[in-house]
Length: 216
Image (cartoon, rainbow, N blue to C red; front, side, top):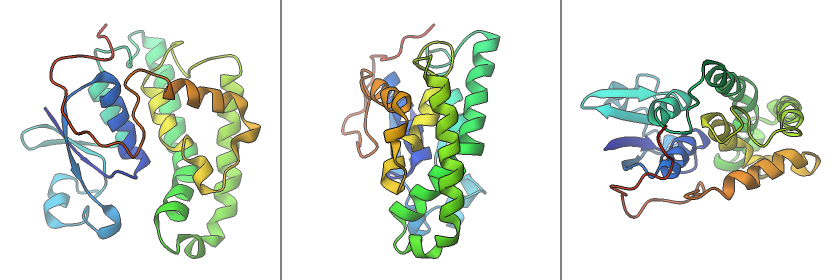
């Protein structure tokens, strides 16, 4: 069983929890509140020197960091991880886009405006740049989704999960999604998936035998 170090309100952590929920994969969640410095303790830094969540223990003493790397690790062998060389590269392309264009802007705005008390005042000088670049990323996504239901392989993949993590909370940090109908339809499409869980959902039972996302 996976052991996942996670933070409930973290978009990056949520990506992994969402993927595991869609697969109905068993895992044990350990809450780490980065706002309280719990990811900077000597014990946690020994597991991940970068001091970030999510962090997945894949074997005794073996840890995997970075949300998108974790997504690939847990999804291999299911329909969430495309098999063809081109589809897999296409999914990776969108996951790189998420980390370079979406997360540093919408993700940063969400963290400082929604999670950190006084964050708006602390980063007032950054807000204009976050908004401009975040809207630019949303427009790229909108253009792509105007003729497609998903981002890669014509189906739900880890690319969609990666992009969903922070896009779905954009309206909590000053972004107006009314001008992005294709993005909003895509958000709804993901939320209608069987076994979908919201960011604030926490497991009460650990599934043991069923698999929600079929293996290839």
